[in-house]
Image (cartoon, rainbow, N blue to C red; front, side, top):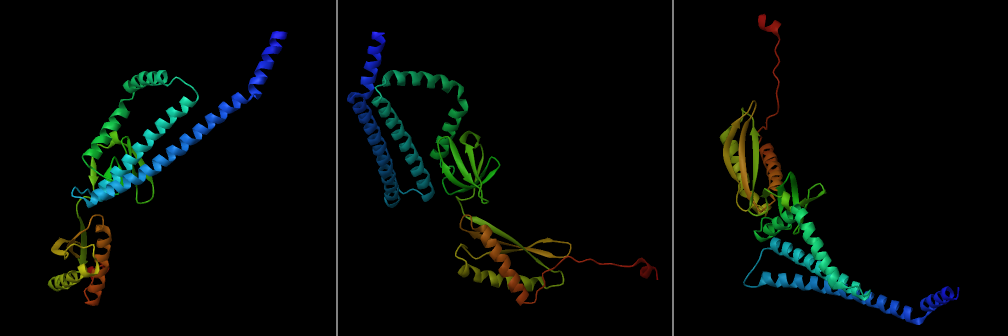
Length: 289
């Protein structure tokens, strides 16, 4: 009984004694400082990375804006992961854990997991080549794996594509086998204009050609005067003429809508009819009579 009572007294003295609480307080203080310093390092590091890439665009070895955004985000994420890992190791050290044995065990476990995580390895390798070959970058409009939209983030394992309707698609890089990038080169707006058969086609072509000469001054996204290619097809009730216009990347949809509006207004002003579906009805009795 006395031994048990002595042990209880010793435990009580240890818990209520100043040594334990001093140790706990120092440990909590160390963890707090580790977290604060980690946050500051990440914040300062992100600013330095942003300034570094901004200076690179002004130097002799310039990089494109799209590639700058991609690489800066990638480097910033890598910095965060490294700082978080170091902070985690330092926090474990405050609990007097054997870090060497822990890392050795983690290495063996990681090797075992690596053999089964082939898809993860494939995603990382694919992500490396996407970034290294500059297949697409942040801000590009792409279509891949049944998904179409703007690239929001390119990482070593996944990439994020935001559709124009707002959905964000997260794709493993290993699934990105074929990519259509609409943002690298200039776009082409294609517009088909219908004119009635009864109208003078040559007059309609002159009116449209005169209008196209005026459009580049109104729409800076047009890189040159749009071209009227001529008669594209003969429909059931209309003659279809095709117009093409070279635009800056991803502006072809807007320019195509503007060309349709401008052509419609000009043809109406010149009295040239744009056809509409027609139906001819006849009576068999009248025909027999």
